[in-house]
Length: 142
Image (cartoon, rainbow, N blue to C red; front, side, top):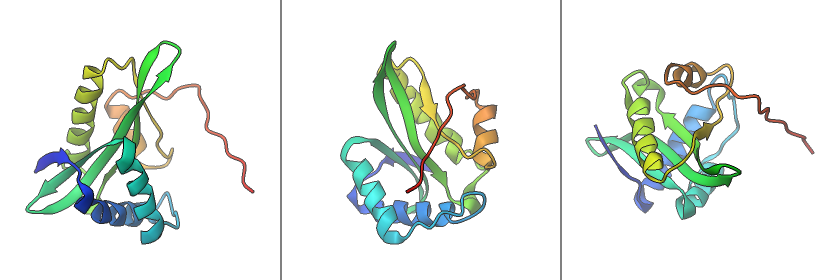
């Protein structure tokens, strides 16, 4: 398995993986290929995107960047997605580790991310010392 920077030709595969993974429990989100592709294309413009690839097939990816907070630059993990059949094989852990190294080199103070409370991802992040904060995500639907 190699990790490399994503390129333009990877975006369709990344969009398909996102659409497939987020359509399952606990997310049950109604992503289409069109909306998924739009999202990864927007990320491609200003985020770092790494893919995990083996034998010309992509099995996971991470998208991340930085933002400024009162105490300095912060890292933000936008997406970390590994195909269901390849979860539990350290792909996500390796992608996250590479992002952490890159973000540390940019002198970030901390890394932030969101995870669905009922997802495997939530316990995955717990094991890697990502702590739940007092910040609460709220939404208002129209």
